[in-house]
Length: 481
Image 1 (cartoon, one colour):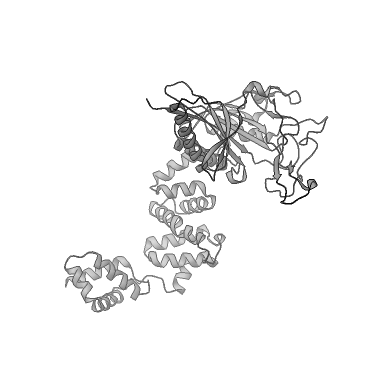
Image 2 (tube, rainbow, N blue to C red):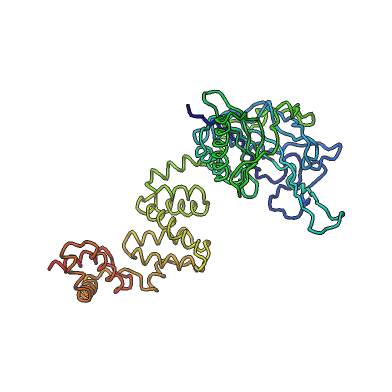
């Protein structure tokens, strides 16, 4: 019988608030100066008292509402005791028995709880220089800028059974946090940190749980889980007993490594935080379930369904979900076009291909701020009406990106306005056939690709100003004579 993996995730996300969780020190993740955003509270000076950050509580409640969780009426904070150099108090203020949110689902994964706590400081370690004296040995430094930053922790039920599902859940959570404005959730900056609890067994009982901590990319999450499933399975098949432990992930070696034996809840000696009053959330009108739900924007899965119903391609849908600029441009165009299906399809295609290409092209001079929704909409309407060809539209779009302006004026100045005069088109067709008689004969013989070549040559002869549909029609007529 094959081994069955069971996986649960714990995700920490730094919340976007003006100040830290329990004090007035700024919450600025981009502060480069060490120990600049600190005060007696977040440095744990004796006699200081924490005060709860209301905005952080609201962020967690909104996440809970979005995932369909139960918002607590009564909640309290607890002390989670453990010693580490970057925990100034010797304990962390967290939540244990009474979290702000219980239950909910996201990406098909059941959620156990969502609660609030404070982040730790940041330690850095410097090895001694080669040949350094005894006084110039190894140094460990602590930067307390991050100490006390509001930290949301979300814990899933142990209901995940493969690495792909775990990665999908983590990506969807990042998207939700950004949609709600609750967190920037950048994994590479440590604003979102993922831990996976993994076990394998031959039946429905849980095996020995191993926690892999601080995975800083979605690929690392998936690879670490896959590695652990394989490692644990091989160990059990060889009769080696597994131990409950905490492991890290070595990106270079693509394998986990032991860090320490895993603590249990008893080791943390939780008890209610005596310096923070208990919270009765029903006494705060804006924290009611209805009030919180009313603040939610269109959620990612609802927007995904709406875009899919419009017939947008899957890659364009995901790009609009994850890129605020692209999404805003598309939404403004859709609104301006009165939700015209053809305009929205054209806009989605040009954004997902041409605009993305311009932004990625270092050689393309310009600025995305030049791409105004009104101008882009006007260009899409010109394509629909046949005023410019798709080739000409690309040239107009490049000019809009470079310096902005009116697409109709740009098309006219560059000679890109499509010619609909049948006599001018017919002359171009006759000239192209005369210059490419062998290709015309191939089309007569049944080679359809030859016709596309001739259309391209006719468009080239008219410098992109010919209507390709009309040119194709005239070519067929002329060749068939």
